[in-house]
Length: 439
Image (cartoon, rainbow, N blue to C red; front, side, top):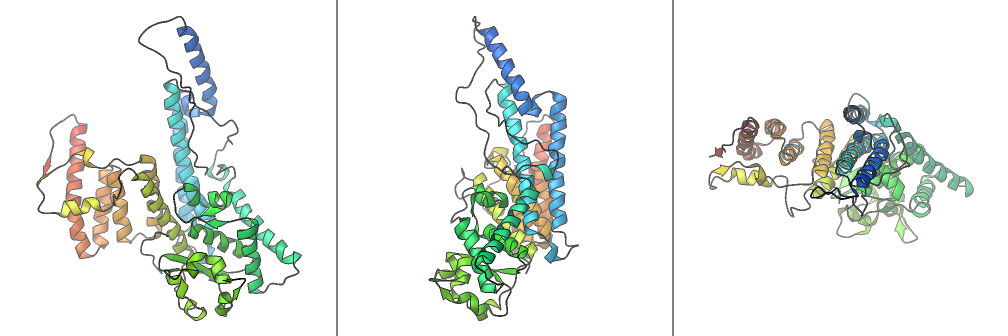
Protein backbone atom coordinates (compact mmCIF):
# COMPACT_ATOMS: atom_id res chain seq x y z
CA UNK A 1 0.00 0.00 0.00
CA UNK A 2 1.42 3.37 -0.97
CA UNK A 3 1.09 6.14 1.61
CA UNK A 4 0.18 9.59 0.35
CA UNK A 5 -1.00 12.88 1.71
CA UNK A 6 -3.71 14.73 -0.20
CA UNK A 7 -2.16 15.10 -3.63
CA UNK A 8 -2.90 18.24 -5.65
CA UNK A 9 -4.28 16.78 -8.98
CA UNK A 10 22.76 3.84 -0.93
CA UNK A 11 23.90 1.15 0.36
CA UNK A 12 22.09 1.27 3.68
CA UNK A 13 24.07 -1.50 5.34
CA UNK A 14 25.13 -0.59 8.87
CA UNK A 15 28.76 -0.72 9.86
CA UNK A 16 29.64 -4.07 11.44
CA UNK A 17 31.86 -4.46 14.45
CA UNK A 18 34.24 -7.22 15.38
CA UNK A 19 33.03 -9.77 17.91
CA UNK A 20 36.35 -9.92 19.77
CA UNK A 21 36.07 -6.43 21.24
CA UNK A 22 39.23 -5.18 22.92
CA UNK A 23 38.94 -3.38 26.25
CA UNK A 24 41.57 -1.57 28.31
CA UNK A 25 41.38 -2.44 32.01
CA UNK A 26 41.71 0.40 34.50
CA UNK A 27 41.30 -1.56 37.75
CA UNK A 28 44.85 -2.95 37.88
CA UNK A 29 48.23 -2.97 36.10
CA UNK A 30 49.79 -5.99 34.49
CA UNK A 31 52.73 -6.79 32.30
CA UNK A 32 50.70 -6.67 29.06
CA UNK A 33 49.71 -3.00 29.50
CA UNK A 34 52.37 -1.60 27.17
CA UNK A 35 51.68 -4.23 24.53
CA UNK A 36 47.94 -3.54 24.71
CA UNK A 37 48.56 0.19 24.41
CA UNK A 38 50.83 -0.28 21.39
CA UNK A 39 48.25 -2.58 19.80
CA UNK A 40 45.47 -0.02 20.39
CA UNK A 41 47.60 2.76 18.89
CA UNK A 42 48.38 0.69 15.80
CA UNK A 43 44.69 -0.06 15.30
CA UNK A 44 43.61 3.52 15.67
CA UNK A 45 46.35 4.74 13.36
CA UNK A 46 45.23 2.28 10.67
CA UNK A 47 41.62 3.30 11.19
CA UNK A 48 42.36 6.98 10.74
CA UNK A 49 42.61 6.61 6.97
CA UNK A 50 39.30 4.72 6.81
CA UNK A 51 37.55 7.19 9.11
CA UNK A 52 38.87 10.74 8.54
CA UNK A 53 36.80 12.09 11.42
CA UNK A 54 39.04 10.14 13.79
CA UNK A 55 42.34 11.62 12.59
CA UNK A 56 42.43 14.90 14.49
CA UNK A 57 40.13 17.72 15.61
CA UNK A 58 40.86 19.81 12.51
CA UNK A 59 40.05 16.88 10.22
CA UNK A 60 36.89 16.25 12.19
CA UNK A 61 35.73 19.84 11.78
CA UNK A 62 36.59 19.84 8.08
CA UNK A 63 34.83 16.53 7.51
CA UNK A 64 31.72 17.72 9.32
CA UNK A 65 31.64 20.83 7.13
CA UNK A 66 32.09 18.65 4.03
CA UNK A 67 29.09 16.49 4.90
CA UNK A 68 26.95 19.53 5.72
CA UNK A 69 27.76 21.01 2.32
CA UNK A 70 27.02 17.67 0.61
CA UNK A 71 23.62 17.49 2.33
CA UNK A 72 22.79 21.03 1.23
CA UNK A 73 23.93 20.38 -2.34
CA UNK A 74 21.79 17.24 -2.66
CA UNK A 75 18.75 19.10 -1.29
CA UNK A 76 19.35 22.08 -3.60
CA UNK A 77 19.63 19.80 -6.63
CA UNK A 78 16.41 18.03 -5.69
CA UNK A 79 14.61 21.37 -5.24
CA UNK A 80 15.93 22.57 -8.60
CA UNK A 81 14.81 19.37 -10.33
CA UNK A 82 11.21 19.66 -9.11
CA UNK A 83 11.09 23.46 -9.23
CA UNK A 84 7.75 24.94 -10.28
CA UNK A 85 9.70 27.34 -12.50
CA UNK A 86 10.17 24.50 -14.99
CA UNK A 87 7.50 22.59 -16.87
CA UNK A 88 6.29 19.38 -15.29
CA UNK A 89 7.25 17.30 -18.33
CA UNK A 90 10.88 18.36 -17.80
CA UNK A 91 11.00 16.93 -14.26
CA UNK A 92 13.12 13.76 -14.21
CA UNK A 93 11.63 11.27 -11.77
CA UNK A 94 14.88 9.31 -11.65
CA UNK A 95 17.11 12.33 -10.99
CA UNK A 96 14.82 13.68 -8.29
CA UNK A 97 14.74 10.38 -6.41
CA UNK A 98 18.47 9.76 -6.82
CA UNK A 99 19.13 13.17 -5.22
CA UNK A 100 16.85 12.04 -2.37
CA UNK A 101 18.96 8.89 -2.01
CA UNK A 102 22.19 10.90 -2.14
CA UNK A 103 21.09 13.20 0.67
CA UNK A 104 19.92 10.33 2.88
CA UNK A 105 23.06 8.29 2.20
CA UNK A 106 25.28 11.29 3.01
CA UNK A 107 23.48 11.64 6.34
CA UNK A 108 23.93 7.94 7.14
CA UNK A 109 27.57 7.82 6.05
CA UNK A 110 28.33 10.73 8.37
CA UNK A 111 26.54 8.94 11.22
CA UNK A 112 28.48 5.74 10.55
CA UNK A 113 31.77 7.65 10.65
CA UNK A 114 30.77 9.31 13.91
CA UNK A 115 29.78 5.94 15.41
CA UNK A 116 33.03 4.36 14.23
CA UNK A 117 35.06 7.16 15.78
CA UNK A 118 33.28 6.70 19.09
CA UNK A 119 34.02 2.98 19.08
CA UNK A 120 37.63 3.54 18.11
CA UNK A 121 38.07 6.08 20.89
CA UNK A 122 36.80 3.41 23.28
CA UNK A 123 39.37 0.93 21.96
CA UNK A 124 36.87 -1.23 20.12
CA UNK A 125 37.82 -2.74 16.76
CA UNK A 126 35.86 -1.48 13.76
CA UNK A 127 35.68 -3.39 10.50
CA UNK A 128 36.12 -0.88 7.69
CA UNK A 129 35.54 -1.30 3.98
CA UNK A 130 38.88 -1.15 2.19
CA UNK A 131 37.31 -0.70 -1.25
CA UNK A 132 35.23 2.37 -0.37
CA UNK A 133 35.26 4.87 -3.21
CA UNK A 134 36.58 8.35 -2.46
CA UNK A 135 34.22 11.17 -3.39
CA UNK A 136 34.28 14.92 -3.13
CA UNK A 137 30.88 15.89 -4.60
CA UNK A 138 27.31 14.62 -4.67
CA UNK A 139 27.71 13.64 -8.34
CA UNK A 140 30.66 11.39 -7.44
CA UNK A 141 29.11 9.92 -4.31
CA UNK A 142 28.74 6.12 -4.57
CA UNK A 143 25.20 4.84 -4.10
CA UNK A 144 25.52 1.09 -3.73
CA UNK A 145 28.68 1.24 -5.82
CA UNK A 146 27.50 3.59 -8.59
CA UNK A 147 27.22 7.34 -9.02
CA UNK A 148 24.01 9.14 -9.91
CA UNK A 149 25.04 9.35 -13.58
CA UNK A 150 25.87 5.63 -13.59
CA UNK A 151 22.42 4.77 -12.21
CA UNK A 152 20.86 6.93 -14.93
CA UNK A 153 22.97 4.98 -17.41
CA UNK A 154 21.53 1.78 -15.92
CA UNK A 155 18.09 2.95 -17.02
CA UNK A 156 19.54 3.69 -20.46
CA UNK A 157 20.92 0.14 -20.56
CA UNK A 158 17.51 -1.37 -19.75
CA UNK A 159 15.94 0.65 -22.57
CA UNK A 160 18.62 -0.61 -24.98
CA UNK A 161 17.87 -4.19 -23.93
CA UNK A 162 14.24 -3.59 -24.87
CA UNK A 163 15.31 -2.21 -28.25
CA UNK A 164 17.52 -5.25 -28.82
CA UNK A 165 14.61 -7.54 -27.97
CA UNK A 166 12.41 -5.78 -30.55
CA UNK A 167 15.10 -6.00 -33.22
CA UNK A 168 15.82 -9.69 -32.54
CA UNK A 169 12.17 -10.56 -33.06
CA UNK A 170 11.88 -8.27 -36.09
CA UNK A 171 9.04 -6.41 -34.38
CA UNK A 172 7.97 -2.92 -35.28
CA UNK A 173 6.88 -0.16 -32.94
CA UNK A 174 3.27 -1.16 -32.33
CA UNK A 175 2.24 -0.10 -28.82
CA UNK A 176 1.30 -3.58 -27.58
CA UNK A 177 4.51 -5.14 -28.91
CA UNK A 178 6.70 -2.49 -27.29
CA UNK A 179 4.96 -2.99 -23.95
CA UNK A 180 5.37 -6.75 -24.23
CA UNK A 181 9.10 -6.26 -24.82
CA UNK A 182 9.39 -3.90 -21.83
CA UNK A 183 7.55 -6.41 -19.64
CA UNK A 184 9.81 -9.22 -20.85
CA UNK A 185 13.02 -7.34 -20.05
CA UNK A 186 11.89 -5.90 -16.70
CA UNK A 187 9.91 -8.75 -15.19
CA UNK A 188 11.41 -11.85 -16.81
CA UNK A 189 14.97 -11.20 -17.95
CA UNK A 190 15.83 -8.76 -15.14
CA UNK A 191 13.45 -10.30 -12.64
CA UNK A 192 11.94 -7.13 -11.16
CA UNK A 193 9.20 -7.82 -8.64
CA UNK A 194 6.99 -5.87 -6.28
CA UNK A 195 7.61 -6.03 -2.55
CA UNK A 196 4.32 -6.90 -0.81
CA UNK A 197 5.32 -5.15 2.43
CA UNK A 198 7.70 -2.23 2.98
CA UNK A 199 10.02 -3.64 5.63
CA UNK A 200 13.40 -2.86 4.13
CA UNK A 201 15.05 0.35 2.93
CA UNK A 202 16.13 -1.59 -0.18
CA UNK A 203 12.54 -1.34 -1.37
CA UNK A 204 12.30 2.40 -0.73
CA UNK A 205 15.18 3.96 -2.70
CA UNK A 206 15.39 3.96 -6.49
CA UNK A 207 19.04 2.89 -6.81
CA UNK A 208 18.53 -0.03 -4.41
CA UNK A 209 15.48 -1.21 -6.33
CA UNK A 210 17.50 -1.06 -9.56
CA UNK A 211 20.23 -3.05 -7.79
CA UNK A 212 18.11 -5.67 -6.04
CA UNK A 213 15.21 -5.93 -8.52
CA UNK A 214 12.66 -5.72 -5.71
CA UNK A 215 10.81 -2.58 -4.68
CA UNK A 216 7.61 -0.79 -3.82
CA UNK A 217 4.91 -0.48 -6.48
CA UNK A 218 5.51 3.25 -6.93
CA UNK A 219 9.26 2.82 -7.53
CA UNK A 220 8.72 0.00 -10.03
CA UNK A 221 6.19 2.25 -11.78
CA UNK A 222 8.81 5.02 -11.91
CA UNK A 223 11.37 2.63 -13.43
CA UNK A 224 8.76 1.59 -16.01
CA UNK A 225 7.97 5.23 -16.83
CA UNK A 226 11.67 6.13 -17.17
CA UNK A 227 12.48 3.16 -19.40
CA UNK A 228 9.52 3.86 -21.69
CA UNK A 229 10.41 7.55 -21.85
CA UNK A 230 13.79 6.53 -23.26
CA UNK A 231 11.93 4.51 -25.89
CA UNK A 232 9.80 7.49 -26.88
CA UNK A 233 6.69 6.04 -25.23
CA UNK A 234 4.73 8.23 -22.79
CA UNK A 235 3.45 6.42 -19.70
CA UNK A 236 0.90 8.13 -17.47
CA UNK A 237 -0.41 7.20 -14.04
CA UNK A 238 -3.16 7.82 -11.55
CA UNK A 239 -4.03 6.93 -7.97
CA UNK A 240 -6.95 4.52 -7.82
CA UNK A 241 -7.98 3.80 -4.26
CA UNK A 242 -4.84 2.73 -2.44
CA UNK A 243 -2.97 1.80 -5.62
CA UNK A 244 -0.99 3.82 -8.15
CA UNK A 245 -1.58 2.53 -11.68
CA UNK A 246 0.27 3.30 -14.91
CA UNK A 247 -0.52 2.80 -18.58
CA UNK A 248 0.62 4.14 -21.97
CA UNK A 249 -0.96 7.32 -23.24
CA UNK A 250 -3.23 6.01 -25.97
CA UNK A 251 -6.59 6.71 -27.62
CA UNK A 252 -7.32 2.96 -27.70
CA UNK A 253 -7.02 1.85 -24.05
CA UNK A 254 -9.22 -1.19 -24.62
CA UNK A 255 -6.14 -2.89 -26.15
CA UNK A 256 -4.56 -2.88 -22.70
CA UNK A 257 -7.36 -5.02 -21.27
CA UNK A 258 -7.26 -7.81 -23.87
CA UNK A 259 -6.25 -11.01 -22.09
CA UNK A 260 -3.43 -13.06 -23.61
CA UNK A 261 -1.68 -15.94 -21.82
CA UNK A 262 -4.02 -15.50 -18.89
CA UNK A 263 -3.27 -11.83 -18.18
CA UNK A 264 -3.98 -8.45 -19.76
CA UNK A 265 -1.14 -6.03 -20.50
CA UNK A 266 -2.63 -3.68 -17.92
CA UNK A 267 -2.39 -6.43 -15.29
CA UNK A 268 1.21 -7.32 -16.19
CA UNK A 269 2.28 -3.67 -15.91
CA UNK A 270 0.48 -2.97 -12.63
CA UNK A 271 0.64 -6.26 -10.77
CA UNK A 272 -1.88 -8.35 -8.90
CA UNK A 273 -3.98 -5.43 -7.65
CA UNK A 274 -5.67 -5.20 -11.07
CA UNK A 275 -6.96 -8.77 -10.75
CA UNK A 276 -7.75 -8.57 -7.02
CA UNK A 277 -11.56 -8.21 -6.60
CA UNK A 278 -10.95 -6.34 -3.30
CA UNK A 279 -9.12 -3.58 -5.16
CA UNK A 280 -10.78 -0.64 -6.91
CA UNK A 281 -8.34 -1.23 -9.75
CA UNK A 282 -10.09 -4.50 -10.62
CA UNK A 283 -13.17 -2.56 -11.78
CA UNK A 284 -11.32 -0.53 -14.40
CA UNK A 285 -12.07 -0.83 -18.10
CA UNK A 286 -10.76 0.88 -21.20
CA UNK A 287 -13.45 3.56 -21.05
CA UNK A 288 -13.18 4.25 -17.29
CA UNK A 289 -9.40 4.57 -17.66
CA UNK A 290 -9.89 7.70 -19.78
CA UNK A 291 -11.83 9.33 -16.95
CA UNK A 292 -9.05 9.07 -14.34
CA UNK A 293 -7.11 12.15 -13.22
CA UNK A 294 -3.55 11.91 -14.47
CA UNK A 295 -0.81 12.45 -11.88
CA UNK A 296 1.90 14.95 -12.76
CA UNK A 297 5.58 14.09 -12.42
CA UNK A 298 5.68 16.19 -9.26
CA UNK A 299 2.70 14.25 -7.89
CA UNK A 300 4.54 10.98 -8.51
CA UNK A 301 7.66 12.24 -6.71
CA UNK A 302 5.34 13.29 -3.88
CA UNK A 303 3.85 9.80 -3.59
CA UNK A 304 7.35 8.29 -3.38
CA UNK A 305 8.32 10.78 -0.66
CA UNK A 306 5.12 10.13 1.31
CA UNK A 307 5.93 6.41 1.24
CA UNK A 308 9.43 7.20 2.48
CA UNK A 309 8.01 9.23 5.38
CA UNK A 310 5.77 6.34 6.41
CA UNK A 311 8.57 3.78 6.10
CA UNK A 312 11.03 5.71 8.26
CA UNK A 313 8.36 6.69 10.81
CA UNK A 314 7.43 3.01 11.21
CA UNK A 315 11.11 2.15 11.70
CA UNK A 316 11.58 5.02 14.16
CA UNK A 317 8.55 4.09 16.26
CA UNK A 318 9.01 0.32 16.13
CA UNK A 319 9.52 0.03 19.90
CA UNK A 320 6.34 2.08 20.53
CA UNK A 321 3.70 -0.17 19.01
CA UNK A 322 0.67 1.74 17.80
CA UNK A 323 2.21 5.19 18.31
CA UNK A 324 0.68 7.72 15.93
CA UNK A 325 2.09 11.09 14.97
CA UNK A 326 -1.02 12.85 16.23
CA UNK A 327 -1.43 10.91 19.50
CA UNK A 328 -0.22 13.81 21.73
CA UNK A 329 -2.82 16.16 20.22
CA UNK A 330 -5.68 14.15 21.72
CA UNK A 331 -4.18 14.29 25.22
CA UNK A 332 -3.49 18.01 25.01
CA UNK A 333 -7.07 18.70 23.94
CA UNK A 334 -8.63 16.65 26.75
CA UNK A 335 -9.96 19.29 29.12
CA UNK A 336 -10.80 16.66 31.78
CA UNK A 337 -7.15 15.77 32.34
CA UNK A 338 -5.38 17.04 35.43
CA UNK A 339 -2.72 19.76 35.11
CA UNK A 340 -0.01 18.33 32.99
CA UNK A 341 3.58 18.58 34.13
CA UNK A 342 5.85 19.18 31.19
CA UNK A 343 8.61 16.60 31.38
CA UNK A 344 10.86 15.65 28.49
CA UNK A 345 10.99 11.91 29.30
CA UNK A 346 7.23 11.80 28.59
CA UNK A 347 8.07 12.15 24.91
CA UNK A 348 8.46 8.57 23.55
CA UNK A 349 12.00 7.56 22.67
CA UNK A 350 12.29 6.84 18.95
CA UNK A 351 15.15 5.67 16.76
CA UNK A 352 16.90 8.98 16.06
CA UNK A 353 18.33 8.19 12.62
CA UNK A 354 15.05 6.90 11.18
CA UNK A 355 13.16 9.81 12.75
CA UNK A 356 15.56 12.28 11.15
CA UNK A 357 15.23 10.53 7.77
CA UNK A 358 11.44 10.81 8.06
CA UNK A 359 11.80 14.53 8.83
CA UNK A 360 14.11 15.00 5.83
CA UNK A 361 11.58 13.29 3.53
CA UNK A 362 8.85 15.50 4.97
CA UNK A 363 10.92 18.64 4.32
CA UNK A 364 11.25 17.66 0.66
CA UNK A 365 7.55 16.95 0.32
CA UNK A 366 6.78 20.37 1.81
CA UNK A 367 8.75 21.91 -1.07
CA UNK A 368 6.20 20.28 -3.38
CA UNK A 369 3.16 20.92 -1.19
CA UNK A 370 3.81 24.00 0.97
CA UNK A 371 0.09 24.59 1.66
CA UNK A 372 -0.75 21.01 2.64
CA UNK A 373 -1.86 21.54 6.24
CA UNK A 374 -1.99 17.83 7.12
CA UNK A 375 1.56 17.33 5.91
CA UNK A 376 2.78 20.38 7.82
CA UNK A 377 1.01 19.16 10.97
CA UNK A 378 2.71 15.76 10.71
CA UNK A 379 6.04 17.48 10.05
CA UNK A 380 5.61 19.59 13.17
CA UNK A 381 4.74 16.50 15.21
CA UNK A 382 7.89 14.72 14.04
CA UNK A 383 9.92 17.75 15.13
CA UNK A 384 8.19 17.48 18.51
CA UNK A 385 9.16 13.80 18.82
CA UNK A 386 12.71 14.85 17.86
CA UNK A 387 12.59 17.38 20.73
CA UNK A 388 13.04 20.34 18.39
CA UNK A 389 10.32 22.27 20.21
CA UNK A 390 11.04 25.68 18.70
CA UNK A 391 10.80 24.37 15.14
CA UNK A 392 7.73 22.32 16.04
CA UNK A 393 5.97 25.42 17.36
CA UNK A 394 6.79 27.29 14.16
CA UNK A 395 5.51 24.53 11.83
CA UNK A 396 2.35 23.83 13.82
CA UNK A 397 1.56 27.55 14.03
CA UNK A 398 1.82 27.80 10.24
CA UNK A 399 -0.36 24.68 9.97
CA UNK A 400 -3.08 26.31 12.07
CA UNK A 401 -3.32 29.10 9.50
CA UNK A 402 -4.19 26.59 6.73
CA UNK A 403 -6.07 23.92 8.68
CA UNK A 404 -9.86 23.66 8.97
CA UNK A 405 -11.26 25.35 12.08
CA UNK A 406 -11.83 22.12 14.02
CA UNK A 407 -8.24 20.98 13.38
CA UNK A 408 -6.85 24.37 14.39
CA UNK A 409 -8.80 24.15 17.66
CA UNK A 410 -7.27 20.73 18.28
CA UNK A 411 -3.77 22.07 17.66
CA UNK A 412 -4.03 25.23 19.74
CA UNK A 413 -3.68 23.75 23.28
CA UNK A 414 -0.83 21.50 22.15
CA UNK A 415 1.05 24.43 20.59
CA UNK A 416 0.61 26.36 23.85
CA UNK A 417 2.18 23.46 25.75
CA UNK A 418 5.02 23.33 23.25
CA UNK A 419 5.70 27.02 23.94
CA UNK A 420 6.08 26.16 27.62
CA UNK A 421 8.26 23.13 26.86
CA UNK A 422 10.56 25.35 24.84
CA UNK A 423 10.71 27.88 27.67
CA UNK A 424 11.44 25.16 30.22
CA UNK A 425 14.18 23.75 28.02
CA UNK A 426 15.79 27.20 27.87
CA UNK A 427 15.25 27.64 31.62
CA UNK A 428 17.02 24.37 32.45
CA UNK A 429 19.88 25.17 30.07
CA UNK A 430 20.63 28.15 32.31
CA UNK A 431 21.07 25.87 35.30
CA UNK A 432 17.64 26.16 36.88
CA UNK A 433 15.99 22.97 38.15
CA UNK A 434 12.42 24.01 38.93
CA UNK A 435 9.71 22.34 36.84
CA UNK A 436 6.84 24.08 35.13
CA UNK A 437 3.19 23.07 35.38
CA UNK A 438 0.71 23.62 32.62
CA UNK A 439 -2.91 24.19 33.58
